[in-house]
Amino acid sequence: MFRNDTKNQADKLLLDIQLVEVLNKQGIVHFTGSYYLDVMVPLDIDIHVLANDYNRGEYIQSIHAYIEKHENICESFISHKKGFEEFATNLDIAPLGTYVGLGIKYGGKYWKLDIWYYEKGCDPVDSIGMSMKYKKVLDSNPKKRYLITKLKKEVYDFEARKYQSGFSGAIIYDGVLYKGLQYRRRF
Image 1 (cartoon, rainbow, N blue to C red):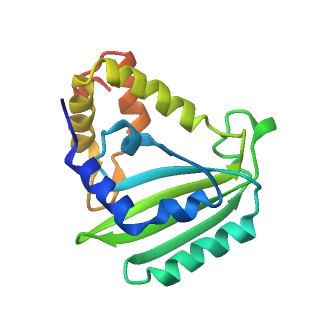
Image 2 (cartoon, one colour):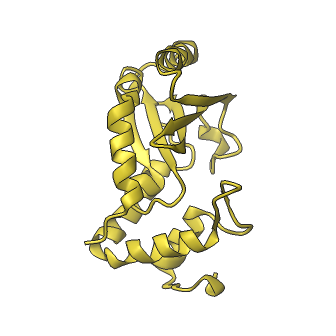
């Protein structure tokens, strides 16, 4: 069975830095994206926290306390109060939320943690649902994990820390899982 070494490193990072324990106090924690799907290439972990009782101030305070306690590994911090309008597919249900981007230096590498905190019952782009849908297909055809990871490595610019123009993880997932694409030039 295919097992991504980057995913193994991410598992160790999450265990060692103990951030999930802090987030669990704020709500229900869900992993999405490439970490959840075991197709990691960029050192990027997407985390969604569905608030027990949405309180942005308390949440940001808990993140700041975490950063102070772990200042030896926390390199950057970005916070945006959002209604998630730019991400929502249905603006009528766009929840109030907060995005936190946390840069972590771990194992000699820079990791980016994207943490989305919002009201329970509101997933602005159905990231959790889409990840579960992708995972179901990948679990039934694990060879696709290798293909997705290979394609992501071809189109990810590691120096700039971003995908080449016209590519994203979701575009690659859809192309491989639902359109049968196997080569970069077909996208």
